[in-house]
Length: 277
Image (cartoon, rainbow, N blue to C red; front, top):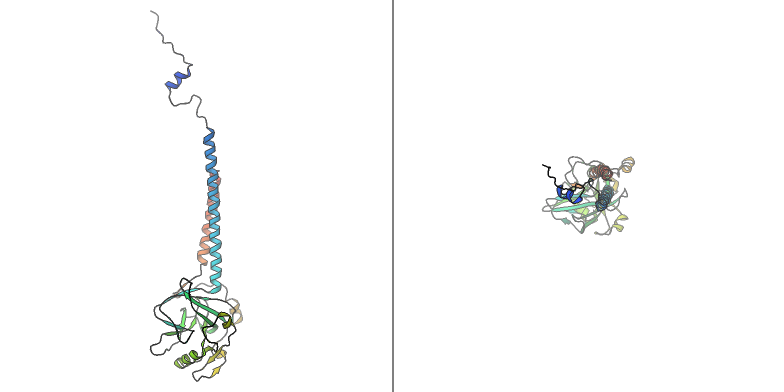
C-alpha cells in the first residue's frame, strides 16, 4: 500500500514564518533607527561630560580667588558674648553678637579696619589701626584694655588675625583716648580727627599717644613697628594656631581639596567619555 505523503512546500516563507515565529531566517539585522539613537546618546553624554568639567574648573578658580582676597584683607568672623567698645563717637558700643573684621587697605604703617555685621551689608565702624609689634599674639583674636570704667564694657585695644605675629592697635578719638589712658594708666593711641571719619580722611589723619596727664607723646612710646623682613612677609599665608577660636575666611585647605577633586573628576570623566565613544 503506497505511503501517504503530505504535500508541504518547505520553501514556502509562509510556512517558515508560522513554524518559527518571531525569528529572522538570516539573523538580526541592525535597523538604521537604532544606530541613529546610539550616536545621539553618545553626543549627549559627551556634552554632559564637557559641561561638568567646565563647572568643576570654574568652581575651583572662584574658590582660589576668594581665598587670595581673604588672605589679603584678613577677614575674620568673631562672636562676642558681651558688649565691647570700639573707636567711634564717644564710647561706641557693639552689642553682643557676631561681626566681621577686615582690612580695607594694607599699607603697612597704618591700616583701615572695617567692622560690619555677619552679612556684610551694614558697617558699624571704620577704624584707623597701627601695626604694633609689641603686641605679640597670645592665641586670642582681640586684646582689650586690662582695666575698664565701672559699669562700662571692655574696650578693644587691638585685633589679631590668627597666625599673625603682631596686632593692629586701634586709634581712639583724642577725648576718649584720654579717658581710657586715665583708666588703664598708660598711653593710648589717639587722633585729633573727629570720629567717625571716612576711610580717606583716616589714611592721612595724624596719630599721637596721650598719657593719663593729658600730655601728648610720640607714637613710638606705644607702638613698635614690625621689622622690615617681618613686614615684607606679612602677606604670606600662615596657618592659624589651634587656640584661635574665631572663624576666619581663609579657605586654602578647601581650595586644595577642590582642586584635587576637580582633577580626579576630570580624568575620570575623560576616561568615561572615551569608553562611551
